[in-house]
Image (cartoon, rainbow over all chains, first blue to last red):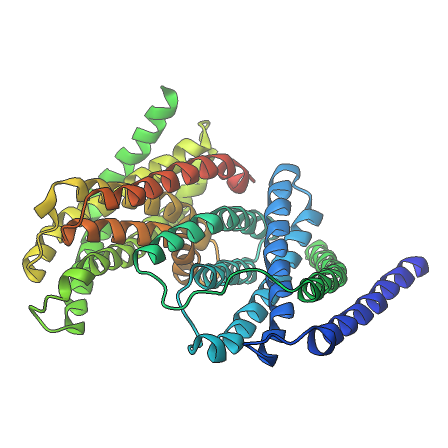
Length: 225
Length: 225
């Protein structure tokens, strides 16, 4: 037990220091973008959050399938935790995006495929989390949520392609500039992604622990009735 | 063969129930026509602009009325424990699901058959001016809507909020259906090259196939007790 607490603590310390370094790299040491200037620096955490959001929803998808097959509630804990953390990072993506877009594109929002898909994604998992809150029976909650976790994730690429086709019919006024990142910027981005992955891992460990404790409390309550 | 007869038995049951009560189709029909009428207030009567939004208005009225009908149809299954009794029957459970989905599909199609001519008169738009392909769009779109709508209505009636949950879960997931149906319909209403509608029809078809398979795969898992 003591060993477990110690290893969780050391992961936390590691995560906090990596996030701090990532902040330093993103805000200070990474080169300034010539045209966009300082606002471009939001890009590192924006991309890292987007990566974590998609990864988290993928984990929810995988563990929803595993739960339906194995009926092991630990898988449901993981699916639930990952969806919650995923929507947190998805929200960060949707907030940091417009902050960058306003000075660069001149508008807070545009119906670009990536933006629209991320918004739809946010709504799907907001529904997933709401659904969990509104079902009392543990087994129904887990099974129904798993169905949403699976269908929602399969739906995402279809949503993306449909919106991309839609936008090709009505050409986009503002197009994102070509790739070609400066190597220092690429490194800063990769480091931010790595730091955020640690953050995700640390949050997941805590959230899954809470979920399994909650499940224990619920089962204790049932035994007493 | 036994599978098909189960599906037909469920459809038969729902049709009989609907012929007696006339609750679902009549409330859906009134609601969809009302939506069409209310939407007409958003632009000048007789303006040319209306042709571009006609397809969207028509689909929105079906989506909203469909959600109303799905809730109603599933609520009547839940009251009295009818649905649990159906699941106890020694038949393939997915056959029960596809029976429910088929009767929902029939009800919504019936509403469309009445609403579309009325819509064409009220908006002075001939949807079928460029051939009868729009009928295929309605069939494919309604099927995709029914298949996921039926599954999500089973989920949502089991929540504390009941009816509220269905649109929250369903609308983001069926974005591809709405988008593809509206875009394909617009091609025909505006008299563009029918080849433009092909990819949307393919998208609708793929959506239908993918989610038929997915629902078929997960339904057994999520309803077993």
